Image (tube, rainbow, N blue to C red; front, top):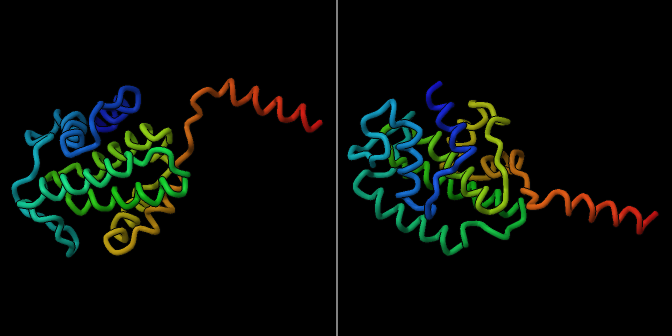
Length: 179
């Protein structure tokens, strides 16, 4: 319940950042600061879940630097079609999940990071339209193939209209031109 309220705060006022490891750490800290002493801190131990070993703790920072450097080279996924955005967002979400930089709370932090990334690229992701089971299945499968995660993101991503009034007027004018 506490984390739900913290995430709701971030939907209204996202944490500014450079879409890098420090940004992800700030998001994790905000969501979990009232629960974990280690909120916002990179894990120092290796962890596994259901026979899958996440990224070696020794290489989290260097792996993140490379990964987020690639994200920067892709201009943080701006100016992409919804399909291309979904494909690339799935790739980065899957890779961040493999890094699994925190002891606990990775999934919620990763989804919030991805939601903020989407907003920065003029897209809206509505994670609440996905069940926990669907999300978990797609994340598990993304270790091998990101297609299911890509399709899941595609189903919950919509372009943000910068000025809906102008769009509405433009559409009305097009209708008048045709009629």
